[in-house]
Image 1 (cartoon, rainbow, N blue to C red):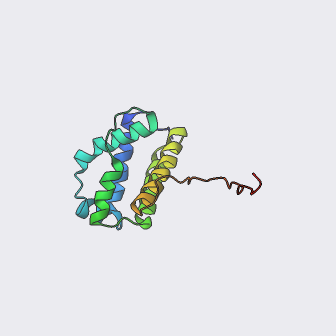
Image 2 (image 1 turned 90 degrees about the horizontal axis):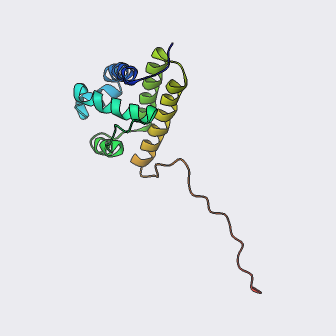
Image 3 (image 1 turned 45 degrees about the horizontal axis):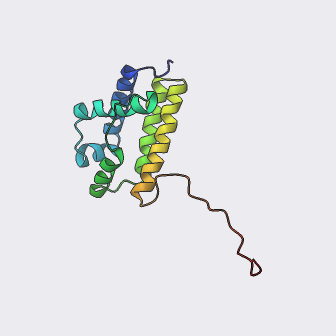
Length: 142
């Protein structure tokens, strides 16, 4: 299998993924009934997103988090939703591609899903938390 090499590969991958997601028992109703997603309008946006993630094209200039915040208000998105999204995403990649960009697409999707879930749950988007070194208390003699 070939790696993901260009926008054509991304378009085919995104089309495959959304076919799976729309048919999925858990995610389908979210995409179809709640988000009322028009795939023909959404596909180029998602291709811009993944082209930017994988090839640093800079073609995606939207706020992906805000779209999910709005959706979450209508239908709470849970860890189960994000896990299923990742399962379908990884399967679509693994069925079509192998190589460094394919692996990057899976790693980045995991990071994005985890960050969104944390933010939608009211936490920080970062998996890293500030760690402050313990400082010794000032001495009375000082």
